[in-house]
Image (cartoon, rainbow, N blue to C red; front, side):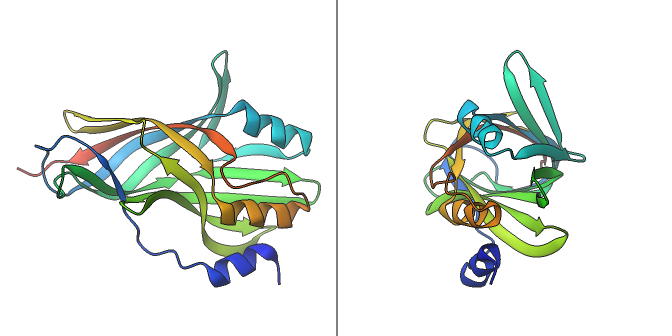
Length: 204
């Protein structure tokens, strides 16, 4: 069985939600209707892809933008739910996206789309739909999210989450190693730093 199919067969991904400190006086659960998540890709990640001859590309409406500040991946926020008034002044949310990334080496192409940021007290995670050479694998865990140093707040109806450390999930590392026949991908490998802007439908 393909390593990534083994992963899906043995991994149960539920509707996990994200938890991180926020303003204790914030309003209750709201839905998201637009916005964007940007990830400034880590030089270590870009260097590893280059050394393995793996070419990354954006899947529309996602974008990859290069500048003097580095390479940024940009994804559109669509639906989601944000609970701003949980016990202890924490944030719970699930934020879905359009677009994605492809990773291509030789005749192997991996497409990762429909990203969902999921955070709860037990840990923060980004999952995505995986397609390998046009064969749908399913939704798998991709990246672990560390919000311990993140900046969180509200600017009017916009939820802002800054400086989220993004690292490779162990299950995703194992799957990518199996797909590309390498051993370079490891749990905790730095992927980049994420910033989220999500427009909320505020309730009166």
